Image: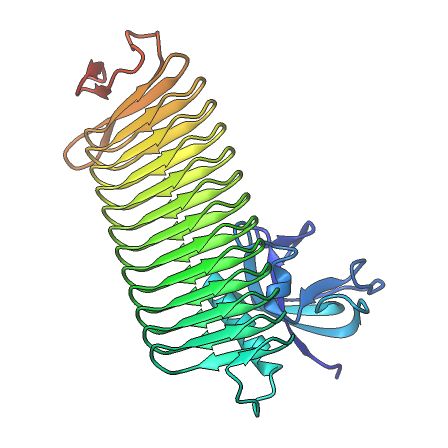
Length: 381
């Protein structure tokens, strides 16, 4: 039997790679020539190397097994081509980052007791309170589990991890990750093809790199990303996800929360109650499904959609559409735009749905409308 190599692979949102459709749990075989960067099934031994080919904002990831005939480039990264590959398990971004940290640690000489290391393939470890672990090497890791502490890494293809409270994990290298799971904490990454992840309460995950992602799942928290082709995701209550990059997305699913995106070809999505999704980019969408909430879009050729009850959808750009589809929803649009409204009974059953361009059917620009029980547009506050 040929040697099996544990690898990691990236895909687009449809689980495709270079047009080939993969599936979780299945094995695939290539009958032709196997050549790195040429033909065969490609995957990387180091998870962080995958970011070079599939950035975290727009991709899916999996742990894989590469076997059969294999080939790799001399002097390149850890990418290999193989004649056979098994797509073992799909990994979330935090899981993928953790696999990267584990891979780095597997390359470290465990006999080393240093707390500050500058070499490649290196690690800095600190478990004490009010302490710091610092690493500046490539393909390296800085880990701290103490309170009032910091883990800092400035190397490429690297990771800074902190699990303590009142703490910070900072990484400035590209193809890198900063991870923090402590309360009242922050994970910051400024490199491109990178990720900043924080799962603690009263916390923040910040990423300013291109092709990147900032993820926060804590309450009263914020995930902020300003890079292009990027994503900021927050699932905590009383929280905010903010993205200002092009071809980007800001997603928030928490209550009393906001998802804000100002980039073109972008989307701001919020599914929490008493919340708002705001997008100011052209050819973009702001979507909100929360109760007593608002979806606002000021870009041209764009859409604001709200499916929550007692909620509002608003667009101010030309050739744009505001759609409010919940109970007692309202919508308004500017000159050159259009609105879509529903009338539902108290049980939520759809009775009427109607659409109109501004300037037709009595619809005035920049005016709020609802649909009454007869399916007619009526002005409202």
